[in-house]
Length: 460
Ligand SMILES: [Zn+2]
Image (cartoon, rainbow, N blue to C red):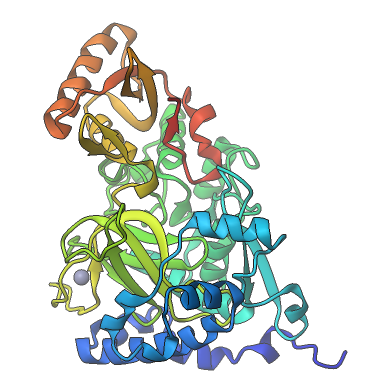
């Protein structure tokens, strides 16, 4: 063996990893219930270690030095409010200045000799895709975190799971795959998206092997159910779906189709699953052994009190490779006060994903978000959960138009349009244009097949 070459099991002590970051089901027996002091003590000590490490990465050193932040000043969790934040735009600029990886990565390709590495790219819906380098350890812990999320959503060891996320540049499909195979002992069927394995074939696989879940967008899962019905099958009776895992979309519709509860998770490609909803459905519990989350004002970056919606600033404290320390991810949500949930857990809760801070549009003095418009529009009977919002300039003023997909007969479209317009005006306090379109006709705008649907375009 070449000198210094370390294979996964040489580079990482997996027993150690599973002790420090407990996988399911063990995690839900003890760590889920520990008290607030123990949560905070562990988190602070991990954050301090992580800050030391981040300070040795050029991007963070420059950012922190420029803002007068010294990692040794991190003495309590309150001090996290002083950590300088950065956004995806800062990372994009950094990649341009330091191609091809940017200098915000804590490792480089050479390190792969000492510890196996892999790289995945962000969706890249605008600009160049952003690379993230992951060490073997990072893959291991984020696999544990993803496994916790899917366990909470209903998957169990031994389940057969069709993974219908895109096996491509993006992390999504691989991170779920690793979580299920390595930490949940589930049997993964590597279907990838409908473009690789047709929807009919996916349905066939799910039936033949008795899949407990099909990992995909909620919209795609609805289409698979429609396909089943068109073959005279009942999705509840003739499929074995027991978990709505990773199926972000119209939850009520999915629960109705499959007759099982849906629990939300929150995460993103650089860090994996951050938080998961419990059966109480009063917020998503943050995995505080691995994350610190705070909420700031979208425009000023100032900290917001519990309960107020703003942009999430996420810090991970589990990695050994590329740090994410004070990342203003610009996803909107809120924090609940620290208190014991009815499920028994003290883990801090955050609200559900409430939209993107960087697609906020000020319309005649009212702040509106495309996701908020979509949620209201697709709650109207006769629509399906697929929409696309455009900002346009007409008659010298800004306007928003939402296209909503519907299965309803064309002679019902006028009435449906009027109902949606009325509901939007009632709930948002501002007029928004509505057009009704046929199912599937928005795919060219939303890029549905890639998993992370795009819901907004600025045409002003
Ligand atoms: Zn709970």
